Image (tube, rainbow, N blue to C red; front, side):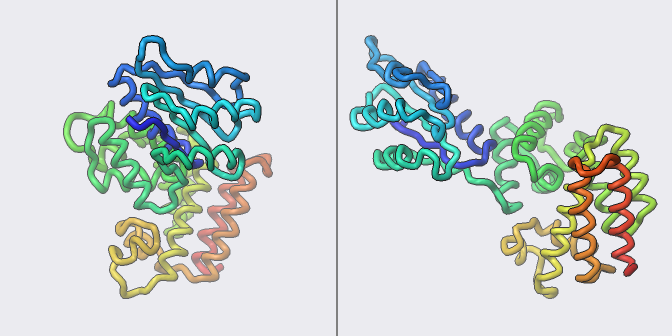
Length: 316
């Protein structure tokens, strides 16, 4: 392993995965690893952890949340950078940003292996992440299964990690398909939330209200419903501004969406006008604020939003 690693970026799920893979390597090498949370570091802790081993044993030091390291402890790191121990690996975990930048720049000068962990915005990036998570678990998943999972949980990378772990553990041998993902999410907030979204976008208020009640009864958080509807409306807005004659696979990279999502949005766009979309976005934004605490009855706020969105689609 390299003497220095820098896990850099604010996406915790990527950071967790990177650190997990590195610690697994250290374990294979029978290295004794010490973890220090930077904010809790006392003067001398880092120097003690990096002191040469009397028995020349493989060791590692992991410093988490490096941006929070107290000033008194920073000199211990910079001193070590100039005279590293060949039997020791140091892994720095930094969330990015300007905090602790001087120390970060000093670390970069020794040319650590940098593992970028910036937030993923494109659907393709998230799908690659999920595919890799399944492979980490020793499983393979079909593209449709990966896309379905990202479509349901793409807003929360840590929840994606948990879902992949559970599905990989519970699913029968073989390639994990979309049906297995759907089965896993049956009755869960993300699946029912998107059921509500689909009915709402289609302008079917009775079905949307029934789906909403069913979702709430099975433990759905209202916030997940507003999130699902908002996501669907964003997809409509993206696709509405794209070239109508272009193939979905040609637009996928440009829009940051999977081809099947583009096809679905195109079907759902029928009956929607730019003015109606604008009204719908305003309605769900208001509902989102209300279910997060601005309203005493979040369910009523959601029902009102569904009525407003379906009415907007109908031109009322």
